[in-house]
Length: 500
Image (cartoon, rainbow, N blue to C red):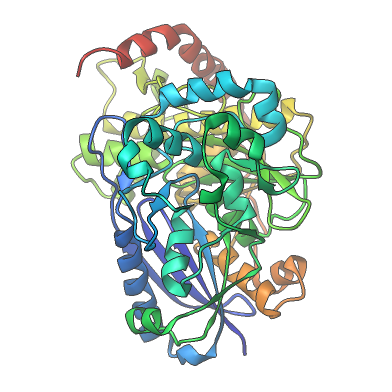
């Protein structure tokens, strides 16, 4: 029997699953951590924290599984996108990683827009420039930490750093490379045009492979740290949203993933590298050669709910929060939440956007706040889907995942706000499953992704259906939600410039 290990390097923790060829989860490990905010708007993580969490996860997996580590056929990775891990000549980080939700590089975003222009940036990179993207953060380092910048010999993405620690090889995959803003997405290679115009050295960028390509094997040193067997084959894996989509069996245009994790995303495969001409969303490379995908991304999906829990509700349990929100009617009795706690990407691409509760009255309590946050995140997902439709794309089936799919209430809110049936997978930790599948395709356990999805992935047959009355009610609330940003955009920018 074949066994596959999938490891996801997330923003709030590492997750790992050991799975059989048929998709049976034999063992699962979750190792939590946080990210650092050294200054307002900054977001950093120490790469060593990821590595220690992976070592703890693999140790726990091998203890739980009851399967000899020698029987693992392949290891694959999933990881948070966009982040900058700058390494020196010895392969050591020259500073903490600057991760995807960092907003320090707003000046560099404007420089990139001016240097390339929106039309050319979209045509080459398929995406707008945004703070937190690797090339933007690297330009910030060059302009603000030049002494450290001069020490850099290679730039990696978060999962690639962990895989480097496991195998000793420096490389990346095309799905994660697409999220750096340095990739020519049509030709799947680093863009000399972009990097030359930004004054960034193309020699700092590692070789690019497909997610199911070999990345080497577990080294002797890594085996001692992780409990894995030396020589086990390692495969590249991919960006977390791609691996999550693969783990949900999403392989063809028309299938749409709606995921609420730390952020939240809408993703669907594309038949060609079409992109939003207004650059409100992203077109990136998918898991097979000559394939791409649409992604609308918001920065504070589940993060909005965890912020409310930690900062306002003093650590109330999620089941208790869910119970309070269930008592509140659709629309939170006139309370609307804008989930722009970390700025926003799709559709506004505005690092100065700010969160807002609008319509507060004396009768509103904790349950109203909780439900309004859930509804606000769902409204933002609808914003992402609206861009997808404007690009001429079709939505045939919506598949939900992440924390937003584990809450029956939040799942119903998504169905009502999107006004579509919403399906879910029976699989746990879909990003890990997708990473394991990529390893399985690379190792020859599966002939291709289609066979892998048919063999390993199971869906719940009955979708969550929209409630007609709620869907009609949310139409009015969604119009109000859309108007609140445009009415307050200038005030949000002014607020972001006020002294702390």
